[in-house]
Image 1 (cartoon, rainbow, N blue to C red):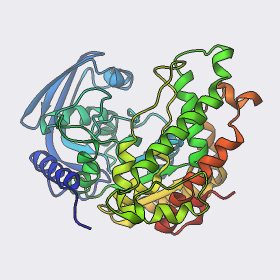
Image 2: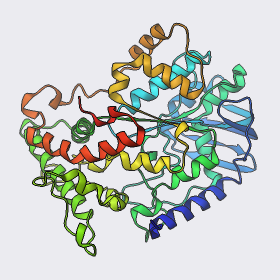
Image 3: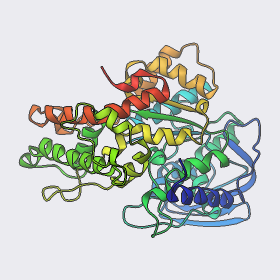
Image 4: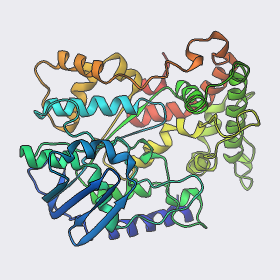
Length: 437
């Protein structure tokens, strides 16, 4: 199939992106370092908790209001008396990606602690960084953004200052820097107002493997049925305490929003000029929904990004997401695998991580090329205890039978995702992605 206009634009953007950053990031890195490290002068002066200035190579920088960096930077300020300099710059070699409410916060803590133990570092805050720097994914809901420039790279390096400090102070070249921004797989920065959502799709996965070639990717997914309901309740309760009468409309509201999204998607997955696929697939009456969808896979990427907006209601006008497109894991992972070798991508489920943490720990270390500690069983028990899940125990649907997902909603969601879960299982040669149990 020929490239679409949007794909052509995306590839052109990726090329421009790479050319910009290749002015700072070299093509060869220091061989004995685990992370992407190269020789370049870097210094930073921390004036207070929200103001930094310094030099990255030939590029000076000044930054303010970096609140997300404040805690860990200030905790190290005493160690280097507000000033830090290095002859080596390092960027991540591990990207932990995923999707909303699929356990990426727990997975980030699990992975970072595991790697620290394997490489001889103290578990915990030794290379503590912001989990989601969102540097490569500068998305905003209402504003378009300029393509990041190499002069902005200091902002990203500053996020890894604790790790860089450890590399210098401990002379430990095995320090692993991890970027845990989950939406790297599915968010598309809008660099030009006239371009559609798909015009930047896969721009970042296309450029990063070229810029940071040692990178490996760990992706965590979850049964999309559970992911959707969890994300819905999280979005409507994270900032407000819902009155009882509003809580009770939750299951019905969720059903209506999911149905509306599925209808939008199926209407998109048709070609009026092709008689065979000119009508939408009927999720509710057609017993052969799977085969109907699989005849239209050439439309999949476009339709996933057509329904990225959220549907709101009068009752909850600014929250209550129905993120159906997030559960189409096959689409996003397939895109990544078109530009990243399969042996550099590890995909696992949250269910696996919860059920078999010792097995997953050994698989993670093997994938990253690190030895498993002899006491792996006890170490993993310590990690799982330390990395308390970012659970939604206070969210009402987990404890109130009246707020459970409706059975007809479950049936609708399961039928909708079945062909895509099947495609994902075939792509990864693993039936666990069918979520049959």
